[in-house]
Length: 442
Image 1 (cartoon, rainbow, N blue to C red):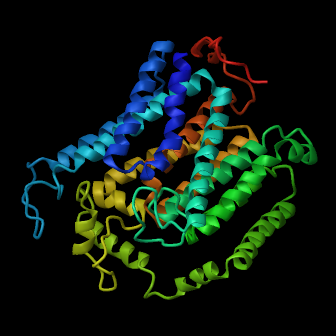
Image 2: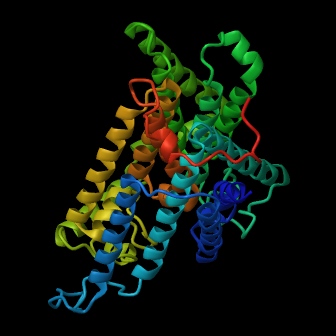
Image 3: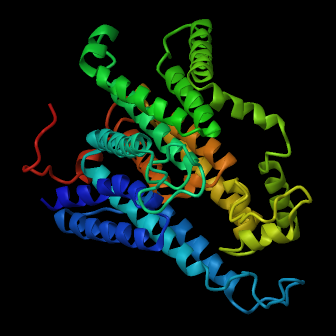
């Protein structure tokens, strides 16, 4: 019973976070944090726990970043140069509090996910995928309802941007599109299980997952998000390539090119006005991301080691803006997570985080042996890297949470099913006794 409660508290956040304006508001983070706290209490009371080394590393990184943000805010530094005249690095000394709270929530939620996944490692990944599909389906329904009723709303307040685009309860079309891509990848993962079945029989038994993937693809196109459509096509290509390990190289290339061509032709024929938006990329006067990235690089060069502290990006971007940047806009992000992190934390801390993340990704990739799980992991990494490179929305709790849970599921799968194909001897010892109140999976 307590295990089920912990599981509900975790999975409910995947559905609730998108509904709560992406989970980025302070009150939304409070709701998500309460669910995480209840889940942790329930799972600790339900079974003996064991903190593994990689979970300690997560908390070590969270503590390292949090302590550095606090140090940035302390008035112990030499007087900074104008116009940031102060004896602290952080431009807003109190901004670290909200950021550290978000970091603690994410680390605690990852901890809850690890404790749950350890108990049911063979079912956790599928449960996460199904919950992501439910969240994406709910957002698709909300977006379709708003389109039918001609409501220009996020269901929280009237839209002031992205009018006519599908955003669901999000305030940003790119965030909605990324969730749809997650739904596509999760649907393909559910369909691709039990590969021993013939394709026709699998379509007969599991064709509903393909139908959901098509629905999410249509919703992605309706969001009018250029990056979302490109990421969706690339993620499908990567997922498909991971499922074709036994085919010859030329066959795999032909199939991938066919997927790309079909996606491009479908978008061009189904929404010619949306296709025209891609042509606008050639007009530099309409595209501001290059100027935003250049402005961010100017800021990083001014303080490459220490950064400017949390909450400072808008002021820093305004000060180091290039002549082509529209400074009347509120540039709270450079539309590149890597540049945002470097402006906030400094280059050394950012490199530490990226190095650890790359090493962890490599270890998971080396450990996962099941093709479907390798395809899911590869597609999720492509989604994260591309989305983080062209925008900031991937940092929303509604998006980074399901991605983190997918990675935890792949990591636990790599522990249970190592590359030699058998479970390690210590797995039975580390797993808690099964909850007899839970139904077994047929």
